[in-house]
Image (cartoon, rainbow, N blue to C red; front, side, top):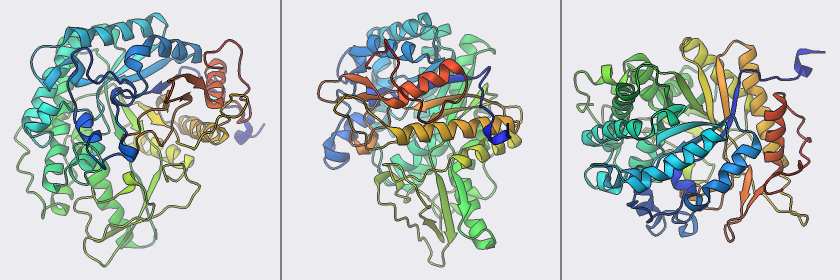
Length: 484
């Protein structure tokens, strides 16, 4: 048997799936929850596709016992969820809300009883609106409030949580929320975005310290970053390679630098000098931010290609969808973005599984003592329900197959990758795209809220049971599974 034909096995490996609170919970005004920036933003005319909001979403707030049954039936080793900050601590400061905390206690207890490890993300983009009104992430006090929130949650949830994740994709929170305005809170203030970068980093460090102060040094803590795999249009062009370095510093190094190395990239201040002097970085901040982690969460969906442009401040892209708007690339002077070759998902993102292998190997070389977990990877496609009730999402199955094989290839090459989480467990509110994009391996009928397993869910269950990569066409529904 050739190496390429050898079955990919996954011993001592965690398979899971992931969701985010605002995308699935609903119950927006129930149980003492107060508005987050995404409540405000989604109710702003023109902000989301078709004016969709997360008011109801998948109604997970009421249907979580059913969703745990699906999680258990899939055989997931772990489930990654996020806490709605404004549900557990209305307004983002003060005492915890007992009803909100009880919701998560019950959910975590059910997951643990089912033998599923809960990975809890403290922040997945839903800042309490009161904190935004007081300045939001550009303000230092928001980081300080986050540190206290983390401490309170560590006390309240304790060892119910297997692994704590401080932040999900702070790049999106800072740049999409405060520079391009295509995410909540919808601000277009470049200097504020860079201040948000630093205060998100500071929030991470304060949260790691707080969790370990409560639970001890052995507490498992991580952060999840959406890594940009950036390529030059012309690898032989020094100018194109410099464009890659510029975007790498803004997109990756602005977070990995302080969090994992204790310093911002050397070129970042110069590249952004016309926007800010970085005076919001205080003595001692980098020591707070640079905390030891148990694992590094890696979110990967697509690659990015850039070239040098002789036109100052040219930032262009022709993919034509909301979240590919590259205006958040502050300081990306004389850089143009080039559309990658297809195929593409329904988001307009190119599909390149091999780049995930390269990313994981690169991270293992750069941070050899830090294990990684692929905490999000998946694809939106225009799913259809067949007359027999099945969702034959063969493109999603192929996508998952190829990307999980890419993880196996990275492990074969020596990368210490500990897990893979399919995005997403359920179709859900896809941020500015509303309900028009479906990432789930379980279909949600938004009229009835019925859950139905897609072929990708059946395929994923086989993978988890066998610990070996099934063929793409091995998708026949299995008996006695919810939603079959």
